[in-house]
Length: 488
Image: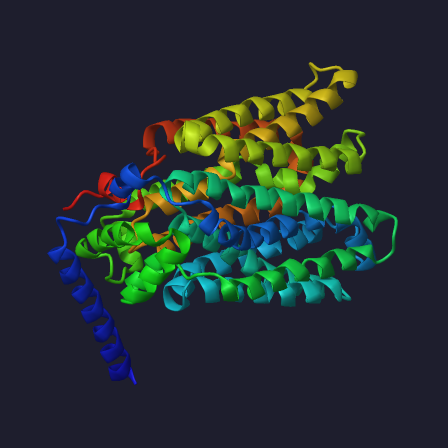
């Protein structure tokens, strides 16, 4: 059996080498995709647009499950008999993040093995099963098991969406398309808040909230059946003819030869060889993996998901209606995501990250100030709510959408999927502990100290981005690779 797989792999490799030889004969006439663009313009963004929307359903589901607990947690805790137990409430939130860690950890292996289309469908499956289990839960353990299943799908989704968007988008709109995933996340979050509003007044409504999420998951699995596979993945597997067909579907006939030439450059640099975990952590790629892991960790240590998970609790303690406050949170998140869509390919990734984290420092400062004795009770509400909305707005402009896109651009094709899974593992670990401990820390040390800690991490993020992050705006994936990883 192993011999048969080895023979198939050798055939793929021989096919790829034949393609390289054929292109070498035409070297004088072949130009890179960037060179073609100068003569006949850029590929039409319309060709790949629908497939970006389909992939963004994974991000919509991520956002929905991120916020579905916000309005429903009180009803769930009452019906399942753990009301007042802050550790149990934190566990309902954070258990799906533990599942997210598992899904994210294996996402690179899954993508490398089965490709993006099947991986997206595998991502949808646990979300359908987990949502059904949560909707029919009779006790805390049933809810936790359902949330764990959902979490594995949440761990797969963001990784797959970021990688797929990067590999199927034309370079000149890659940043804009990358912002679609953040917009989808914000729409999912807003949807969960709107659908969850009746939960406190309607018995059993929280079960409907979980059933609803099964619909976009099923649509994701269905529509992916008709979407093209990533040409980068196809080429890496030795399926050069299929990669050509995928490029033609995504870019159009005139751009296929240039796009294939770019992939052939990567092939000559040894991209087709497999990569080991030790190489990511200690080898030639350790610096870029360290940058990615740290960036995702700082993203979560900013406290953003504590805002999404527990904004109802925070607003209630400030005397503000949770419904009106959460609508404002959703609107701020959407507006910031839309601004990122417009600015990503104009200002660049690094500028947006620095501006975003800087705004988050100011916003967390306002929230910390609202909890101090220096502010009167009449102004406390305005500073607290205003600071939280500014924080969400600033996050969604840069710190939210940029890291996934930026890192999927920075990693060479040979390590892209596995490196993203390693970096996102740090995201899920930190996210898990923030979700688990936020309410307990809020009780123990108070909002002043807690918000000051979050503000400090945001400031550290500004310094880290200035010193370590490369601008990737408008560059092809191969250009970025050669800048970061010159031949040894």
